[in-house]
Length: 238
Image (cartoon, rainbow, N blue to C red):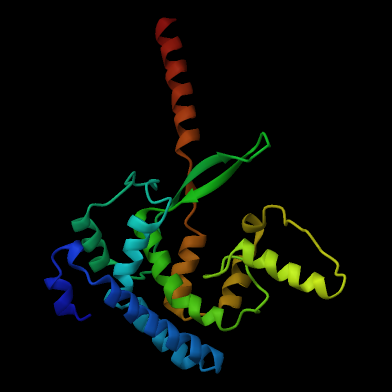
């Protein structure tokens, strides 16, 4: 879609989603094939085109504001949802700029355990940018991943992994390793991660900004605030 179409697209409900999805799919397919044959220059050129694509921006916003199950969880800006005009405005202004707002820390209980697991909740805008970059990077890496890899890949699930294991062990006995790296994402080397990703500068700056953005824990801040108010009340009474 051209810039003229962007300005004329006055209502979210008028977006031709089938056309937008197909436009993004065609670009992703070209990225996938270029990655398969090792044509890095073409991969980077197509990824830039996809990240600037109006169709891709629309899809990124739609996924985080309508399709995602966690879409009603607010980030540090307190915004839980966007109405259609705001969604369209976000898509118009969405771009990879190398900046990031901090994430909001939310604590959720671990099943059967007393401790809680911390989650970082980005703002809607950051989630849309993340989805946009994912649309561009995913086909490159899908072409390079091992066929036996199932974690966090499109079109694959735990059931697929279980079925693959059943197939492998049916042929002859195998050893199974079950391992869990303690606090893996907290301790991972960001420099090595970016080196492995080996993408072009603007994407690298954006991903680095997300890695270094930090978190804000409103629950702990509220507890400290309440404690201070209690002390102030005690002082006033004395």
